[in-house]
Length: 492
Image (cartoon, rainbow, N blue to C red; front, side, top):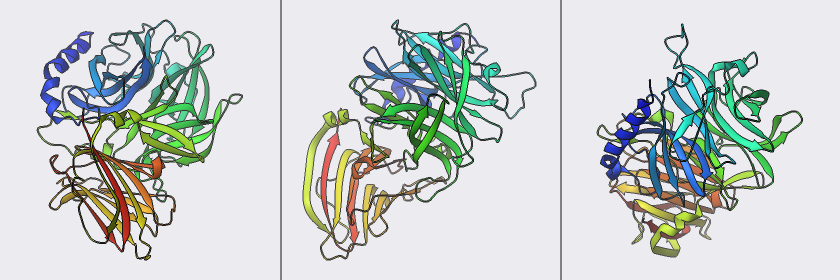
């Protein structure tokens, strides 16, 4: 491959991007054209927020990975920029995999990513070997470092494999640059490994800061490491997660560790563990810190288990979540849609103290690009047993939120979505016991829904597949309950 690989990708997206505009959701980032997965390089650069992403412009299926690129000033309205990286050197000939970004003191932007490469006698079933590479640029054009890989297999201690060694998180502390990556270790599971450098070219292995322990999935991916509200936090995703109550589901999981980083031993001690998101479609989260001090998270609004669920004529596949503000309260992660989304609200419709004991609709409470707030509480007669909210509905097609006040379990169900594909259709999560009360904020954007329960104590993100013009919403209760409802349309 040559440098023309990047120019060809840029030319292709420039020619075909407009052909996909009609498919795009209103306020979730999608690829310029073709395929998108993990967010990459979510960062502040020269006062704007940049988001790169795993990208294959030529099809709506995964292929040799590039880095797509967009930027925003408010996390809602995005400007597409030319494709930033392509697999065009020997260090990344089989793919430019995930990574992160950092603004340098000289005003340039550093991208650190996983390069995938081949090796003589490589097994046929192997995508490639992995090492960490870097590029530096001006927010549009990036030059790969001549010393790539900056962290090769020779920097790994015995017992760590470079078959699965990827997803570098780059940050600076004092005079040192650090890269936190994930790697497969002796028992076949994941660990987080730390490297340091003073010049971005010469790197030293520091430690395994934490390992899987045979509990949190197998191979780890997409680590992030940051301080928040007086705690230190480590997040990552994992393959082959085992279910654990209502907290973790089987398959591709996401994890949030709250704990302490010990500088002397260079290890992370976890105190609290939870899922980041409880929905069907959430993976590969990354965060940044805004100039006003907020910690913002974004993730791929998809899951590897259902990437086959798509239309035959679609020109784009994949989307990002709406970015979220993070807080730690009582040793728990809270998430809330970025406050900037409220600037796009219009057409407020509000109801107070509505009694529900059968299926009903409310005039004006409908739509497919909306910000919907619903507060549920039991009636005084004590008969409340279950609550149902159907959205994106047309006839027998809908997605549904079900709340059981006796068990404090919320269920999201898209079984009647409707798709002819076999895929995960339900997820459950447990909320705090509030004597049968529940507050929900529900953002719907054409084919995606993000649910925030009780002020953001739980989040649940999923794609939905009813026709995009299906906007009916109904409420139903088994027993008597009372609801308050506020709906806004979301418009750019």
